[in-house]
Image (cartoon, rainbow, N blue to C red; front, side, top):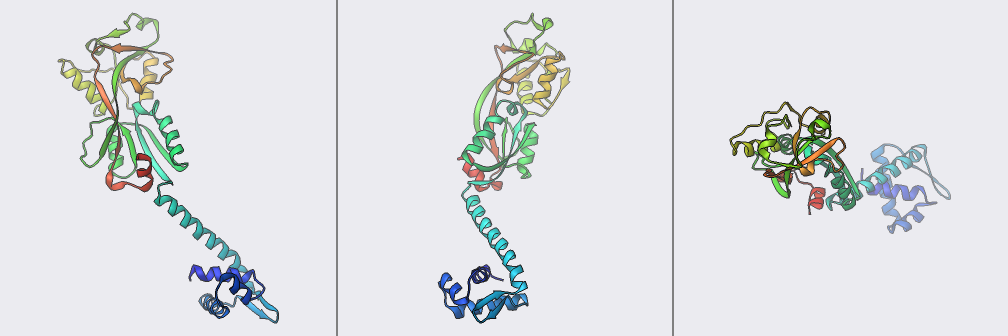
Length: 285
C-alpha cells in the first residue's frame, strides 16, 4: 500500500466527485480512478458508492478515512522528526557526571544543553565514578560523560574542560575549629578522612600525590558519592579532600581549608567516537 494512494483516497473522500478531487490533486480523473481501484483491490473492499451526482463513502471507506488520516499524519511527523534529528536539532542525549561534577556543574550543563537544542530530551546519570562512566560510554549506555581522567580505554576521546585544585573540607563545629585556614597536604593526611573509593580518578590523584611525599592515605571511611562524603563530613565522621568545584558553593555545616601544596585534577568531556549521533555533534560543537 502506497502513502500516495492514501492521499488520493482522502482527497476523493472529501470531494463531491472524482473529477473534483482529481483537479485538486492536479492529476487526471482516469489516473485517480485507477489508483483508487488499486487501493480497493489491495484492501479487498469497495471504498466508494458511485451515485448519479458523484461518489459517497462505503462503510469500509468511512473506516479507512479515519485510519488514513492518522497514518498520513504519523508519516508526516516521522519525516519532520527525522529531518530534525539528522540536523541535530532534536533527539535524546544521555550524559553522565562524575560525583564531584554533579553538584556544581550538572544543573548548568543540562540547562545549557536545552538552550542549545530546545527539543532535546536530556537523560542524566549523576554521582558516578570515572571507571563507571568510562564503562557506560564503551557499552553505549551514555552518549557523553563529564569525568576526571585518567581513563584506561584508548577508544574514548577526551576534551579537557578545566583543571581544579583540591581543598580540605571539615565539619563546621567546635572540635574542628582549631585547624588553621591553610594547611599542608601532608598534615591533612594525618586527619580522619572520608575518601573516594579505590580506583576512582580523584582517589588515584590523591594517592599518587601522597606517595610522592612518602605518605599513604588511610581513610576511616570510603564512599563513591560526593554528596554522601559531604554528609559524612557534616556529621563529624571525618574530613574530606575534594576538588574545589566538587563541593557546593553554600557550605552549610562545612568549612573549607586551603591546602598549600594541593594536587590538581582535570575535568573532561568524554565520548566514544563510534557511538556519536547528530545531536551529540550539535551540542559538542
